Length: 371
Image (cartoon, rainbow, N blue to C red; front, side, top):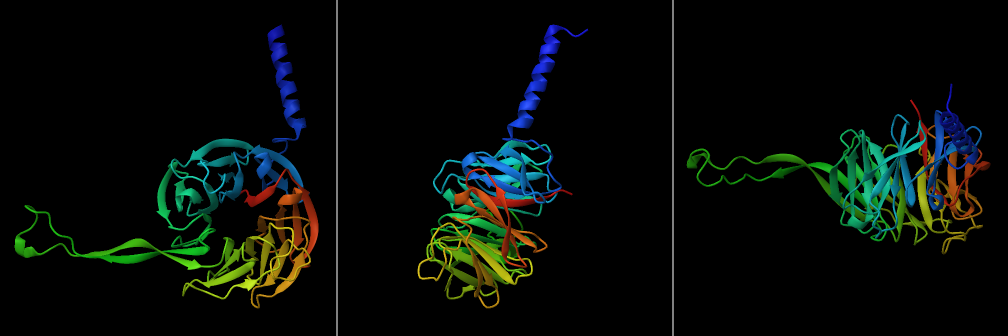
C-alpha cells in the first residue's frame, strides 16, 4: 500500500510534468525528423519549428547572446555560438540534444573569445573567435580544440570550409576583407646538425623537404564585410558590405575582387546562393533604403547571379538577418529580427507564402535533418 509520502511524491511529479507540457516555453513536442531551428537572441533560446505546420513545437535554452548555429550531419546535435560582441568575455559554444530537446554541457573555448561564425566539416566544428582575430576547430570525438589559426584581421566573423577541407574562407568586418586560407605544400631548407653528434662531418646537412602548411590571402572587399557565400562549384565568393551598401565578387582562383556594385537593402547582413547558383538572396538589418540605391524599403533583395541585377525586392516589415535555403531550392526562410518572425519565401514565385511567429529577435537559422 502506498504511503502518504509516496502519494504526494507521485502527485508532485505529475503536476510538474503537466506544468512543463502546458508552459509552452521549453520542450513540449517531439522534434520532427526535418526541422527548422531558429535562434531567438533576446530570449536566449532556440526554437524548433515544424516546417509543415510552421509552428514552434519546442524551445531549448541556448546560452547567452546566441548568434549563429550549425547542426551535426546526423541532425541530432546543434551547436550555438555565444557571441557577446567583438570585445566580450563570452567563450562558450552551447550544445543542444535535438532528440531529447535539452541543453548539453557547453564547449569551453578557454582564452578564445567572442565565437560567432560556425561550420561543421570533416566531422569537426569550426568557429571564429573575433576578439582573438582567429578561428579554431573543435573535435567532438575527443572533446578538444585541436587547431587554432590567426587571420590577423579585425572581427573575423563568418566562416566557410570547403568539402575537401583544403580551403577556408572568413569575413573580417572591421578590416573590410575576405580571407582565403589555403592548404599548400611548402619547402623548407636543410637543417644544420647539432654539434657533437650525427654522421661524419663530410656527410653534409640533412636534406630539406616539403610539408603542408596554410597560406592566408586577405582580399579587400568593402566596409563592413560580413555575410558572404561561395557559389556552387566554389569559383566565386560574394560578400555583402554592410556599411557601403554594396556586394563584392572575388574570384577564388586569382584572389582578385571585382568592382563592388550597389544593392537596395540597407545594412546588408546575410547573403546566400540558391543551390542551382542562379540567384542570390541578400537580407538587410536596416529598415530604409541603402545609400544611393533605389528601393521601396525592402529588407530582402533577390539577384540574378549571372547579370548581378536585382530580380525582385521584398519588404518584410523590418530589419532582417539570417537566411536559410532548402537543399531542393524550393523555399527560403528569412529571420525578420525587428518583427519577431520568420518569413517563408517560395523561390519559384518569389512571393511570401508563410510566416512563423517566434520569440524576440530571431537571427541565426539552421536545418536539422535527422538520419
